[in-house]
Length: 113
Image 1 (cartoon, rainbow, N blue to C red):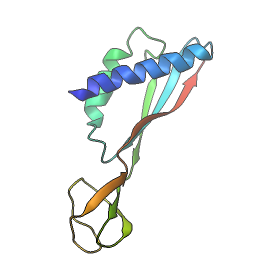
Image 2: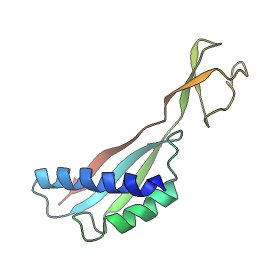
Image 3: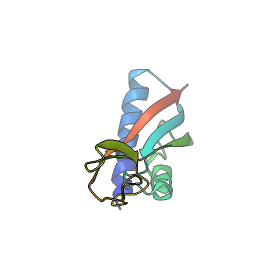
Image 4: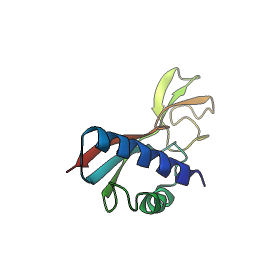
């Protein structure tokens, strides 16, 4: 389950940012997760509950914002919405799509006290 290693990375980012600001506690962590990122959101939430215990972010609200998938269709020569990897192009039905957006996961915002 790669969500555990992602959760541990989020903890490191959050603790570094909070420590740099001299924060006593993290209240909210906002994550952006792309629809094509292969991250299972509920599994990540569970892992974050575990790895954030006894840290500055213990009990912090975790907000997740979905980033829509986007792909570049080689046949159409244009950017198209992409719900899942390996879906056909919604314009031409072709399968020559390269994901260009919605593949990322990042810590967008941290609210501290």
